[in-house]
Length: 155
Image (cartoon, rainbow, N blue to C red; front, side, top):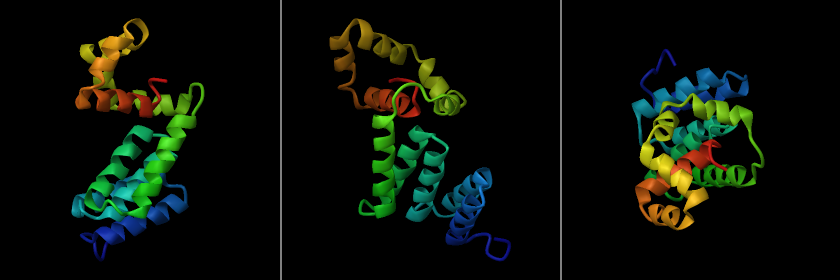
């Protein structure tokens, strides 16, 4: 990467190589640099999603794959990755401590859990399902609740 530090594909290939040798932090750093250099480079969004998926940061992987699909809705890497994440979220049973630990360390998840409106909707699922369903009609609230589900915070 020293010869072409401003080349997004090289950074993405570096991320792939680092992932293969088990350096996930280095790989994530390289792929973030690729996206910083070219935020329209779909392969980098797919690689970022893959790395987040393998780290069980499903809520982040969903967003990365979706970013890639926003650029190219036919991209197979992002479509397949998105499907893999959704399947993993829907088939995970019980508490996944590793996934939960990643989620609780995420500032965005912390913000959602400290949001009184979000917490009320979560309580409403138990105490007032009709109110919860009404709140879920709001796309913004639905995105927040879905993010918490994807992160493994909500069942």
